[in-house]
Each structure stands twice: as C-alpha cells, then as structure tokens.
Image (cartoon, rainbow over all chains, first blue to last red; front, side, top):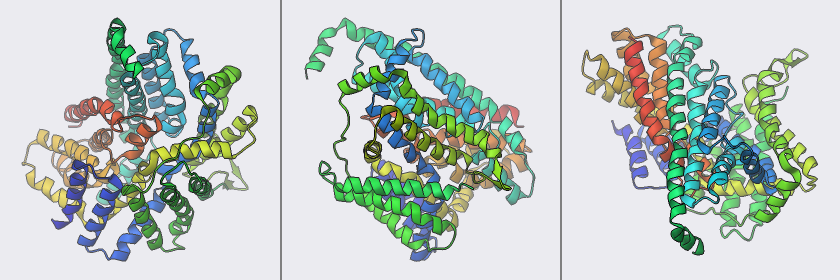
Length: 237
Length: 322
C-alpha cells in the first residue's frame, strides 16, 4: 500500500500547483525508495528513462527552420493566403485541419503534422487570419481561444486517428502486453478496426465544436463592434 | 544505413550550440541557469546513445536529469529578449517572397512522408537505407535539414546563427515543459517495478461488485481515464487496468470481444491525455509555442471533447463488445 504514496505526491503536487518537474522527480524518488530500490537503481531509472524516451523531444529539430521562416514573414503570409478563400471561415478551416490530421495519423503519418511543424507556423495563423478578414484585429480573448482550439484540433485528430493505423505504438503495446501475458494471439488489424467508431465520434463531435466557433466569434465580435467605446478604451491602455 | 542515433546526436549538438548562445545572452537575467539546463539536455542526448547500448552506466545521466529538474523546477531558467524582425519587416518580407515561404515549411512534412512511405523500402547492399522502425523520426530529421537548406538558399540568408537563434528563442519559451515527457517515462518505469500497478489493480478489484457488466465497463474506462490523468500517458495505465479489470473480468468472466474491449479501453485513456498537464508535449508545449497567456488553454479547449468521447467509448463497448 505504501508505494501508492507516489500517486498521492503527484495528485497533491498538482492540486497545490507545484512545478511538474519537481512533482515527478519527488514522486519517482519516493516511490522507488519505498518500493525497495537502492538509490543507485533510482538514479539509473531516471537516466534510462531519459535515454529511452528521447524521441518525444526531437521535434526541436524543426524549430530553427520554422523560426527562420517566421522571421521572414511566414505567419503573415499564412494569414494573407487564407484571406483569399472567402468561404473558409475559422471554424471550417479548423474542422478541415482536424480531418486532415486524423486521416494522416490513420495512414501512419503521425509526425508529418504537429504543434511545432504545422500548428504554430501554418494552422494557427490561418485560423486567425480567417477571423481577421471578417472582424479586423482580434481582441486578446478571441485570439487565445482560436489558438487553443487550433492546438486541440491537432491533438484530437492525432489521438483518435493514430489507433486506426496498425503499426502505431499503442496498438503494438496492446498486442505485446496481452499476447505475452495471457498467451493469446490478437491481431493488430482487429484492434485497429475497433478504433474506427471512436474516431468517427471524435471527428463529428470535435468538428461540430470547431464549426460552432464561427457563431461564437460572430456573437462576441459583432457585440464588440456595437460597443466600440470599450474596445477603444482597451486599445488606449 | 542512416541510424536514429546519428539524428539524436544532431539534436543534442544543436541543443549544445543553443546553450552556448544562451550563455552569452546578456538580455536573459538567468542566462547561466538557462544555459546549464539546455547544455545538460544536449549532452544527455548524446551520452544516452551509450546508455541505450549498455556501454555506459545510466546513473550519471540520472544525476544530470535530477539537476535539470532542480534548475527548471526552482526557477533558475529564464528567457532573453528574442532578436527578431519587426512586424513591419515581416509584412514587407511576406509581400516580397509571397507564397514561396511555404515551400520550405512544406518540405518538412513532404520529406517526412516520403521517408515513411517510400524510402522505407529502399536498401543498399542488403541493408535498409533508414534504420528499421525509426523511419518517421528520421524522416522528420531529414525533412528539417532539407527545409533549412532550401530556406537559407531561397531567402539568401548566409548566417547559420540566424535560424539557430530563432529556434533557441522558442526553446527558451518552452522551458521545463520540454523535459517533462522524458521525466514521465521514468516515473512509469519506477511505478511499475515498485508495484504501484499491482496495488491499484488490487484496489480496483476490491471495489468492483461481482456480476455487474455495466459497472465493470465503467470502472475499466474511467480507471484508464483517471490513471492516465496521473501518469500523463495511457501507455502506463493500460497494463494496470487491463490486468485488474479488462482481461480477467470483461474478457474472461463476461466473454467480451477482446480486441474491442482493449482498443476502446486504450482510447478511454487517450481522453485522459487530452486533459492532463502531465502530457506536457501535447498540452503545455503548444501553449508556449502559440504564446498563450493561459498555459491551460489547450486543455480547456479539449475538456468537453474528452468528456464526450469517454462517454462514447463506454457506450460503444457496452453495445458492441458483448
């Protein structure tokens, strides 16, 4: 029972808003020592964990070229481009991105899209550009909301697309764990097929929420237009 | 054969170069801590190659990881003033280059796709050109390098320091969130060897009433969701909840369709990933990348979808898996 203290450390750490790195560090050390690992073993576990999981950090390699292009106006051009497609509203654009992300992930192209390589330089500025075309400069709150939803479209599309692909980590984890632990033989194909119903639900529901963004922006920003005094006062600050 | 490790060295090396830039950046009030943090990550990336091959001990790397956690966790890292172009310069440059700016940006996904689909099959002298199982990662790396070359030629930018500088500025804004996913991988391993999973499994089995299929389905899916919240990763939750409920109760006792039960259980865990700050690479890093004031912005945007999809998984399992 006492090893569950580590879980408690994580929960309390988050409830009291401690830095997650420290929370995880303390939880790991406490659990390891309580679970009977020697201090050397705990250190080795931290080292091994870092070495084995480097793949999650390698998207950093895309940052220099993205940064360079942004310096030369990539985000501005993304906004200009979307302005030419009058029918592509913010919500429709993000729903389209969601669909593309999901199909890409289902075909195994998980790392082709991503927050560093496609959301920041392309999808987020385009989504904002579509709203700016209609409403002019956006208030901070609307900007944050559009950007957050752009990030969400990438995550939802990825998570609920990738399991439709056979060779993805989570499918292989399921077959690997069950086949070795219970001595059965599950086929990755059957697991992948059972990911399709949820994938459809994800596209329909999250897509609907993205489309609804258009109406929300319409309501909020038209209302702001009707009361120009407050926005002018805010701008003056 | 192009190996994944070469690519990790390149990433480590670029972190080291960026750390050197951070060290000399006087606009950053915490330049020494920042440089130490990223320098350690860079060195760790390279040293890891020997740890993975079992040719070097993992303990020194573990010490380095804890030092990194202390540096970032106690606020010894910061960021400098980014040296970049003005909005006017960007608008002018966008007008000058126009949509040609998209060519390098699209080079990354296109090359990544070609590597994942086409180059994967290529082999030279019986050896595959790209290390097996790492094709997408290598594609991302090769695509980034190709894109950088295309961009520098197209923009007539001769100083390699300029892109490195721009990338470094983004790294600084991400700070601790960059390291968290790698720390979490460790926590998962430690929890497993210390028997946390077995304990959670015991508790779950104890609270589970006999012979109630629907409660068992809900406990499996919600358990996946909650355990993923804590661990930041459905992969750590899956073996625990499956050993406790998924396999013995749902598949064994109630004769559920195993692929359906397990696939939907995993997807219930993914709903947890959407709403946990522990999954920093999906939820916190994007907030930094998109320069959001609210670092929980993406999580808030995902919360309703996560809740509804958790319900969908439960309903689909109840309707079709038995």
